Image (cartoon, rainbow, N blue to C red; front, side, top):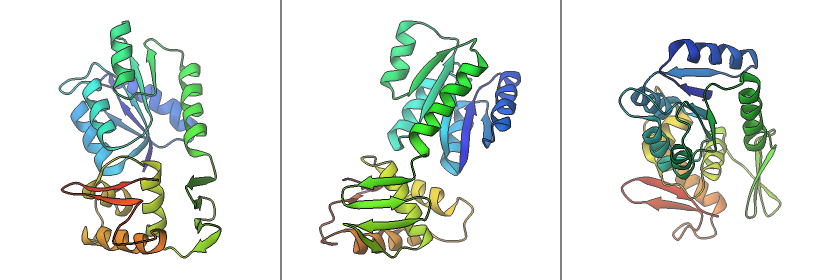
Length: 221
């Protein structure tokens, strides 16, 4: 998964920001249109999206809305559109912050660093009686250890980090196995079954990993 997806149609600005971020040891992808941004995001994911609003084709507001329909990935809007209405629209659509152009690169880097620290640097994730240790990649339920494969751990962690969101089967498969994997989507169904057997009290009436018919699955605490 890419650390940061920069969505910016000004190539010079995009490449300059990319170089600053790579110097901070982030992995970075670039997209100059909304359509390409959504395609890259669906295939590879991103831990943060830095998003311009004025783009050819699909604008940044629509990109923000579509990402928010699927996931809780942090979105940082960076735009020359500085009206109160534009800022409110971006925040209402689910952006985590809105910065005006031209911006101070040090301030932008500090905001990005803050997002990563708040969102990703915690060593554990807690969901009810489940505790996921991201360093040792171990899971306990009510204090008792659960045996999980690497893919089971990744799938459970991803669903918990996006709890409450209806996640499509295609999205889950691409994020956990990779869009170019030789596995088939049936693999996802099997792993969901295994996870339910490990964390649900009643696998026939699951309370946490719920099926969203015609879409995929949703995690609830």
